[in-house]
Image (cartoon, rainbow, N blue to C red; front, top):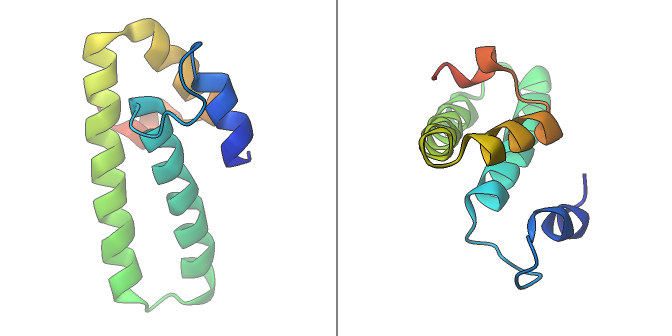
Length: 92
């Protein structure tokens, strides 16, 4: 999913570039996770990338837990759009 198309989906009639929103941050973290996962399939012993992906997973997990507490409807919409399962989140 491209950045601009996702920004327009989550904008909620606000500015088009709402890059501070929880949804956009989770989207960016998910893209980084996908990119690093494909990198780690080729370079299995790249321990710095493994550490980086664990840090990003933790940040995304905390943001999703915050969104779950604040607004469960937005949380469900976001997880369905990004196809994030509860097994990946490990919270809630």
